[in-house]
Length: 352
Image (cartoon, rainbow, N blue to C red):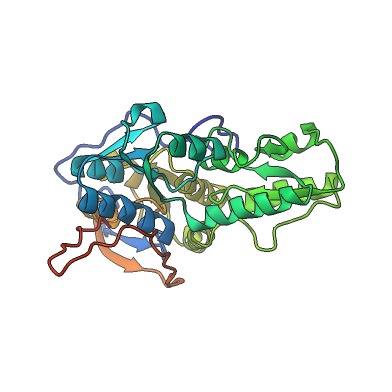
């Protein structure tokens, strides 16, 4: 995990190592050059796209600054681009001046944060991913019916904090199978499982099975909480990994779903590295490799993928091929109050 303990995560690529920013090594990928295989789907999901557009529209309608609680999505490039447009990212609501416009990040927030924002009189736009909101609604509904909850997720991740913060008590966090034996719910007749939306599908299934084994009567979600985009990107890496010599994941260290993509490839026996930008690619990774698999986390914009492709080409790749995969058509509506009115209203340039 990125914040808090990361017991579900393997170690990342070498820290602090930087590839030369210029020049090329035409023999790094072997005498015959190599191929880049692009996973499909990859990159932005509907929830990330919506969250970024909420900040962009708020800036266009209300002017700078717009305050955002936590990183709107976990990607360094996206956050820096929005900072340049006038967004100010904060963790404590006490850092937001009275009367300001505030956006909640895509990860969701606790009831306490919502209440504090209302008490301080901010104009709030909620960029919580609708699939995270669905989990919050389910928790509230079942809590009224007397349920306690077991949440599968990473301690310290903002989505986990937001979901657990929907209740004052009665949600027990498990990060791995061993945790399942340690939790002590007050009762076992009404227990329900909820899951962080960006976990490894396979790891979450293993933990859920351990929960079911200890608490046979546990209520499982009608539809799994892990989101469609997380599932689709992991499935694409599973399909791609056996066909390549190495997998590169474009994503920031704080991105849960990006870390999981790297883990999926490694568990299938394929060497894999995650990079925040093309500058982090090391030529040594590609020596003698004929085929490179490339994917991107759900919070990584396509411009970073294109920069990575150009860098790998400079290291010897001669072709790029897109794999067949699921075409995602999901789109989430924006919250009310962000329509840009008037015949001369200029739509903001949307980061992609």
